[in-house]
Image 1 (cartoon, rainbow, N blue to C red):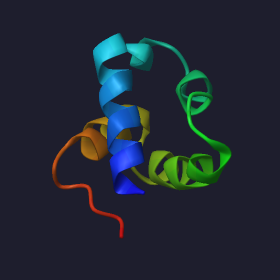
Image 2 (tube, rainbow, N blue to C red; image 1 turned 60 degrees about the vertical axis):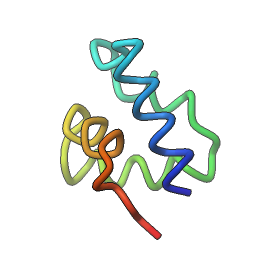
Image 3 (cartoon, rainbow, N blue to C red; image 1 turned 180 degrees about the horizontal axis):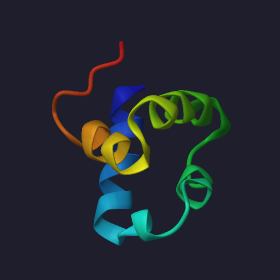
Image 4 (cartoon, one colour; image 1 turned 180 degrees about the vertical axis):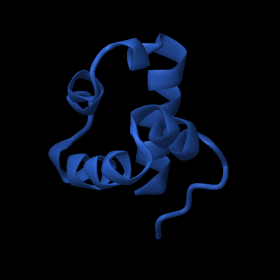
Length: 61
């Protein structure tokens, strides 16, 4: 699970989708990962979530 979310967050960072809305970025995820990403976004905010998930400190398992 964390590998898929890390790849997603790193792709978002590289493509600079953060200038768009979180809804656009979440749209790139499979449905089973969207709830997880939304939980983090509600807690940390969108840009901090992307930064955290792209880091090596993100291990949700």
